[in-house]
Amino acid sequence: MANGLPARLLQRRENPRRTSFLELFFDLAFIFALTRLSRALLDDPSLNGGFQVLVMLAALWWVWFVTAWSADWFDPRAPLIVVLLLWVMFGGLLMAAAVPTAFDSHATVFGIAYVAIHLGRGAILIPALRGHPLQLRSLRVAVWFAISGALWVVGAFVAPVRGVLWALALLLEYSLARLRWPFPRLGRSSWPDLQVNGEHLSERYQQIFIIALGELILISGVAYGDSGMDRESTAAFALAFVTAVALARLYLVPAGSRLGAAIVAAGPPGSKLALLAGYLHLVMIAGVLATSVAMEMTIENPGGRDVTQLAVGVLGPALFLTARVLLSAVVDASLPWARLVGVPAIIVSGLATERLSQLANSAVVAGVLLLVVLVDAMPGLWRFVRPTGASGEPGRWRQG
Image 1: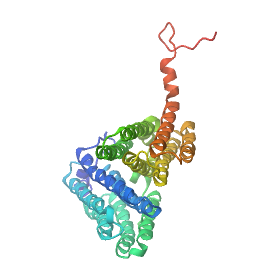
Image 2 (image 1 turned 120 degrees about the vertical axis):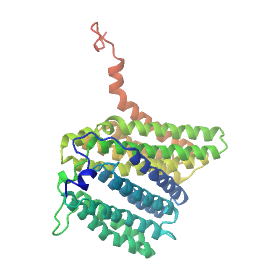
Image 3 (image 1 turned 180 degrees about the vertical axis):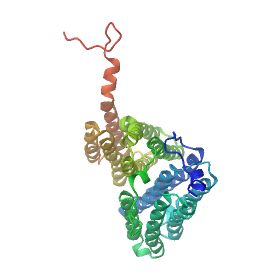
Image 4 (image 1 turned 45 degrees about the vertical axis):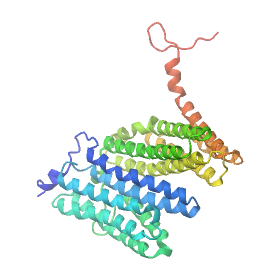
């Protein structure tokens, strides 16, 4: 039986794996979700509103991450996998549509759609993998999602404890993934059972981060189009673009482009690195989301003063840089000093510009990000511009 349906569903691990059209199509649900989340944070930037957006972002990210991880094992051309990805995509769209009122009138839509996504995945994969060793892995994951699903369902119907129960459910799920989904009598998955194609998953991380940056540009463009396009709003829109470029460069160079190779080089234990990278990407995307909200507030009212805009505008880049530093630490075993200094520099600059306009606040934060980019790039620029010797090889500056 293991040579039948499972063999037709599973990818050969030694084969190169590129992102399929269906996976990119699936990502469209996350574009919609990020747009709804940024709008929810803009409507309620209080601590409670921020907590709710964080819970919803963590839930939507977990849907994307678990799907990307499991899809890495399967042939996206197989009809059953097509059905699975479309099932998850539709559930993700339901969750995204419910975001503005997920903690109010549409909690059942958000919570039950989340549970249905994960249990539906198990209902499809467990019978399909009959006779294959990976069936037990899928069973462990499904059992735990059924247990955490009880917290989601109760939270959907009991408003006073909704946030607490949903946050506990997410904490349980995120922790169990790191523990390899242990369950009595079913054991726990081995790292080879969880091994992923490092280059493929790294590519998926890059694609979803680009989507997050696209959301920043999208809502900034919409806000600018609605602002009247005066001089100050144009300057704010330019700052949003500069900020997006700086975040893109800081993400990609250098560890962002070496993550896949690091996962591959580590072998089966590389799954731990891939999982940790998933957690860090959640933090980076949260930082980009907060940054996009701050930039929209600045474009809409560049000359105003708003403590909320200042807090979100500082927190976003600081979160991104912190997670990005940690990604460098786990991929390259290095701590880039410019980025380390950049985190407190952003916070200090935000405090220093508290009495200035939102446009000035955003300009200072963008300036710090550009300075970090420049310092990061200095070694490469030095190698590029230094004089060459007669052989055409890079030479050394002569003294005197």
